[in-house]
Length: 109
Figure 1 (cartoon, rainbow, N blue to C red):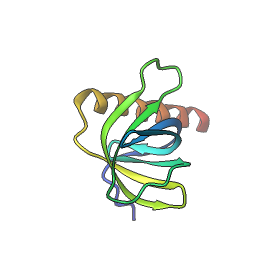
Figure 2 (tube, rainbow, N blue to C red):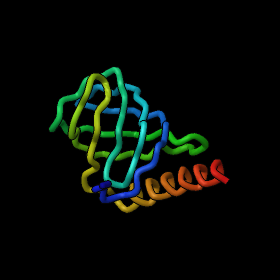
Figure 3 (cartoon, rainbow, N blue to C red):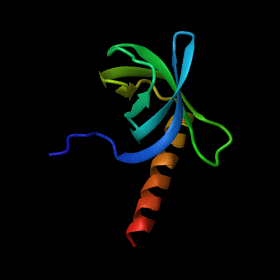
């Protein structure tokens, strides 16, 4: 049984992960209003607080989530929980999720 609180979509979006002063490129594999799964060359430990930038294709301004906490990691893939999203970040994430749901529905029809 699915126990997730938020809609989650498969969204392969380039991301930048900032830990302390280090910023590395990654790929977000799925995303929801509550968090995301990211693959990166940088290993981060659970409990670590990071910042995440989602580089949305066709959008000039990335979605910047200043506060995310690493929940788990396996090899170079990790899950983050978004903390204290600002209204703008929340709106941008909702739009991204809606866009991916619409694309998925188009492919199915």
